Amino acid sequence: MAKLFISYSTKDHGFVTRLANDLKKMEFDIWLDRWEIDVGDDIFDKIQFGIRESDYVILVLSSNSISSGWVDKEWKMAYWNEISSRQVKLLPVLLDDCEIPEFLKFKKYADFRRGYGDAFKELLRPIKSKDLSSIKKPEDRQIVNGRSKLEFYKKIFSYASSYSRMNMPKEDARQFALQWCEQWSNEHFELFKKIFSYAYSYSGLNMPKGGAKEFALQWLENYHDRDFQFFRNVFSYAYSYSGLNMSKEDARQFALQWLDRHKPPSMPKRPT
Image 1 (spheres, rainbow, N blue to C red):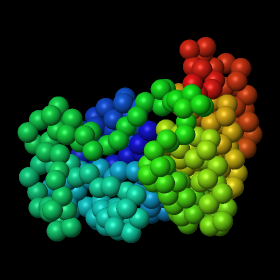
Image 2 (tube, rainbow, N blue to C red):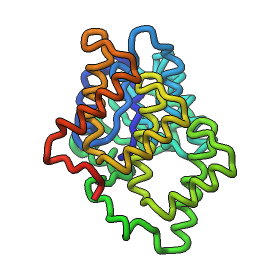
Image 3 (cartoon, rainbow, N blue to C red):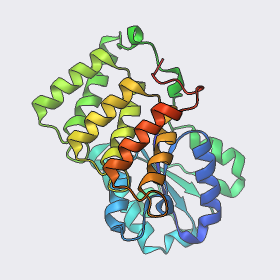
């Protein structure tokens, strides 16, 4: 499922909270500062990581955000990422009448001035969302068209070799991409990225990249996308000071054990 970073002014928190919750209900992975940044975190590093790991950056344009220094920095980082990597796409959202920044004037925006419902549908249109509950069976995983298979390989290789992602040596990334194309589908790759990002991030499991890769691969073998939020909830409680106050590694093991023992039966353990 696509990962969405929302850049906004805190003065527009009412609108943004509604937007974020509506997107979350559709099972998108939402990065919102007050959900992701904890006391003591380096704000700039967390924002930079959030933008880098996102598929889309939603820019909430308003008279409040135009005058915000932090929002301006986020927009410039997102714009640079879009140009340099072509992996992050900017999605402007116009909340009220304001001066549009020069670098966004040629981009079409979702116009929420005319009403919420139609603009929300317009915002969703470019976002490629797929229901991971319909992941294909193993015998259907391979991409049969030669051209699309090459594009899929390039996508995996780029993510594996990128410094800001898995940062694997090119030969290892090549082998990883070849093996992936033979064993898994694009839907599985989107889930892998989501798990890897959480496992590697400081606000998540804070594992080294090699460990995060193995954790994400093991997740694909043993669990479903719908299990992930359940795992995160248990992990957060086990790790939090007001909860069990365990170390991150102990909390991770606890959450996995809890998931295996107490997972609701309606949540299948393996992708089907």
